[in-house]
Image (cartoon, rainbow, N blue to C red):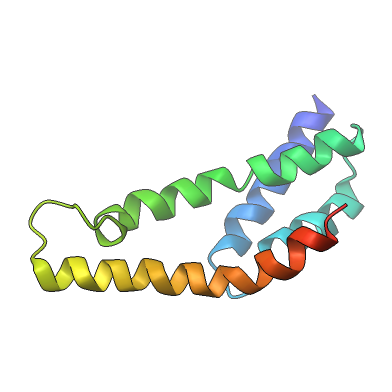
Length: 105
């Protein structure tokens, strides 16, 4: 039961820090130092990713039409702007892929 309360505390930390201009993941790891889940390292790492899925899904639901170039009701200009946005996202991710993949163990 105590582990569930600790997980709820970490969920509250995630919920509060997700929409602030601070690192929610960093605050999760800091909070974990204080409430220390008694689980394996692999479980804690997985938990830190899964706990953020709610925020990721909320963003996807909120911005689905903006991010979807085939959304009904979009004219040619809006579709073009959406593809430009996706292009910019891919270009922004490329440096981390180029540097990160070779250095990943």
